[in-house]
Length: 134
Image (cartoon, rainbow, N blue to C red):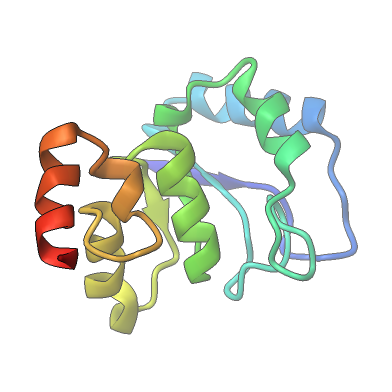
């Protein structure tokens, strides 16, 4: 079972200690994962009304919660990119539109410019890219 914490109201700002308390309570109650609320369009909860990540909130949550216990709602591409770069390609992401699933998987695999360098930094790969460019 997974549960959700946060608020769908973009005007409601929940302090980090409340997020942490609620996440811990859900995990203690038996939740397998806890969903970090973002609203359908990614403009509430762990994001600002313009879709930007509430970096301080996320960092504070991570001081006491393992990111593997969370599912980050990421309906916007920029949110997906940030999450993949921050936590790696196996990060738990949710609230993905059906039409965006293949696009998200290419981001996870480093097959798009947004995440290419994140996952392909070895000298062997750089040599391959140099050959392609020349």
